[in-house]
Image (cartoon, rainbow, N blue to C red; front, top):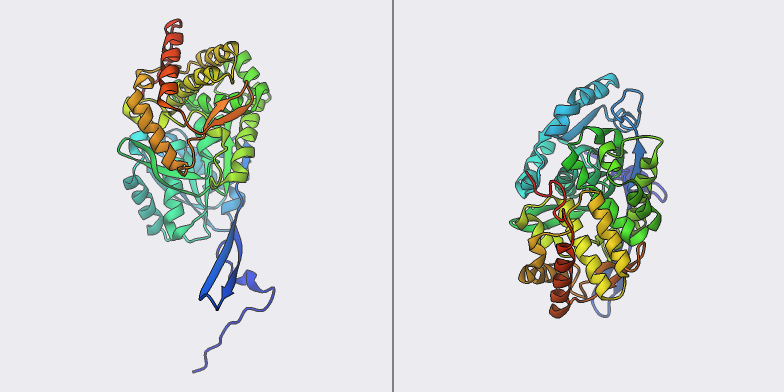
Length: 415
C-alpha cells in the first residue's frame, strides 16, 4: 500500500489552519555548544466589540452572518435571559435556517464555581463542538466568566461570541479577556485569559433588567470616568439617576455617548495589555481591596467596587492627588447613581491587609500598583500602602461618611 505524504509548500500553510479566529508565528534559536534550544512564539488574538440594537430581530444579521455557514449554533444562555427572550432567540435562528442547541444556566454570583464550568464543558463536549466553532454566550457577567473559562479549556482554546445582557457584561466582563471562577471567599481565584472573538452590546436588552441589577453596573462606568475621562464623569454627574430609570436604553440620546465613551476608555487600556503583562491598568480602579470583602460581605459586585472607589478617593486626597472638592464630587456622583460609598468591611484593617497581600500576589509581587485618581480624569498608581496610611484612610473615610446619609446606596446586597 502506498501512503501519500503531505508536505506543505511555501505559502500553502493556510490549508492547515486550526481556527480562523486566531493566528500565530514563532521561531527557534539553537545553541549546540550549550545544548540549548530556545522557542519564541507569538499568538495573535483579535477581539471586536460591536454596538448593536435588537440583535434577535430577524432583520439584524450580526449572528446569522457568523452561524449560517456552520448550519448550527451552540448556545449557553442565562436562564433568566432565556425566560425573557428565549422565544425570540429560538425564532431568530429558525428564521435563518440555523439549528440551535441551548443550555440554560442559573448565573448568580453563588454559581460562579468550577462545577458550573464543568457542566458547560460537558454540554459543549456532548455536541462535539469543534475548535473553530464559536460558542454563543448570552447573559451577564457571571455567565461571561464561567462560559468563557469553559471555552478556554475546551480543546485548550475554543472561540466564543458574547451577547451582553447586563451593563457589567457590556462594558467590562464581556469584552474582558479574563475568565474566572470564585473559590470559597476568594473572588476570581482561578481563571484564564481568553477574550470573546466578538462582543455584541445590545442596550435594548438592558430594558428588562431589574433596577438593582442595572444600577450596580454603573460602578464600572463611573470608575472609567474618574480615572480616564473627565467629560464622561460630567455626563454621569449631569444625568445621575435618570440613567438608572432609562437603563441606558434610549437610542439617539446621551446614553449613546456614555456607553461608547466607557468602552473606548476601557479598551484603549485593556486592548494593548490583554494579558496583564503590565500593571499600569486604570480599569483596575475599585478592584484592589474590594475582592477581599465583596463575597464575605455579600455585596453586589458594583457596590463593592463603588465602596472602594469612594474609599480610594479619600486615600487619594490624603496623598494630595485629589482636592477635597474633587473627592467630595466623586462621592456625590456615587450617591446620585445610588451606589454605596461605605460598608463596615472597609473599616476592617486585617481584612484590607489580607486583600492587599492577595492582590500583591495576583499582580506579580512587584508592587500593589493600586490605581488612584490624580484629579478627575487622571490616574496614578501606588506601589505600596503602609499600615499607617491604610489606618489614616479608614479613619478619614469613616469620618467623612458620618456627615452623609444614604452611604449604603440602594440594594447593595446580593439576593
